[in-house]
Length: 448
Ligand SMILES: *[C@@H]1O[C@H](CO)[C@@H](O)[C@H](O)[C@H]1NC(C)=O
Ligand SMILES: *[C@@H]1O[C@H](CO)[C@@H](O)[C@H](O)[C@H]1NC(C)=O
Image 1 (cartoon, rainbow, N blue to C red):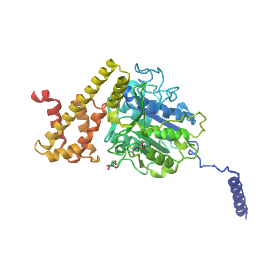
Image 2: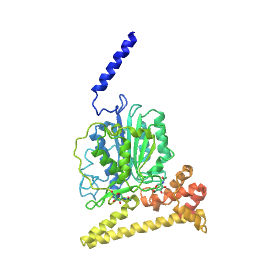
Image 3: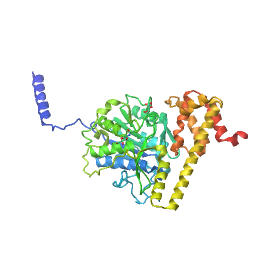
């Protein structure tokens, strides 16, 4: 009897609570007592790559303005852009034409050479001991109730993302995520990745049952795209996927828009590559505020031009910049500048030709110099990467042996790593591939 009365009272309370709820009531954003954490990383340096650090600064502004406190955000960026000698607006970075300064207030934890894969993995996994004395020494300290947002913007290639002088391999990233899962270091994790071939970092690697959802700018075989060439700055201001999700976040209400809604909007707008999702797709039903912060953002959002109009694949950024600057100089009849720019264009073209030749020679040695059909398959194929045991050491060997390829910073060379995927998937032996690399790139050593 008492129990029944109790239940009746309980139901009554429930009903009245339900009635009292405002109509836009949403489920709690975080688990009881949970916090937001965020790790923002731009993995490149140099003026040609302005856009990567601009994207990351913009992401910082978004999560700060939605209430994630600086103590729960960690930023890794080379920090050579705002005060770069090429920057006419000293101390500022923008992420859209005539945009606001997104560099303002960004608290950088790791800069310069501290932006590397080892430190990144230590920060991500909360290995405080390992980063003592490096940068601010701060790490992600998320616990089992906390939600973590990771945003990484940079160059990539099949199965890897690039840092200024080192690669982060897909296998290592996924091992780190597994480790975090096993140690209860998050409740849910959202990973936004803007790199070329970004799908290959997660495809057939990221588990579906680990409360991790990854969204990538491209699939496993495609470039990602730069956008917003700025005449005055002489570089691209953003990347297409990043600009699209961030402009959508700036304009929308993070408390009522789901990840799935953002995915579909951004996928439609990022029409040069396929925006993809991997991992736990049921997380798509969560509100964006679950990761980006749930406070209402009251700052004014500027209208932005369509970023698709001048988008170029990442590997063509350097040459497009030089061509655009050449054309501007031509309009102004600035002969000196025209000469300088055409010299740079010629140098880029020559370097590309050398890269093509190096790779062709390696393929010809591995596949047999008379086997043109096989050579062609290796050069043109777009195999998905499964043989990480071959690919990973071969890519490292190529980087260290063929220094003229400028790996990992040269995106044109990075694009050719697809051919190493093809060789590995064939499969040729590691020895055969290394032997060919030696013959082409270290002929002096071979003679000894
Ligand atoms: C990636 O997209 C390209 C272009 O649409 C397509 O040809 C290729 O099959 C796709 N690859 C994967 C793995 O989805
Ligand atoms: C992408 O969309 C833009 C408009 O936003 C359009 O101008 C362009 O042609 C589209 N590109 C492709 C490849 O569909």
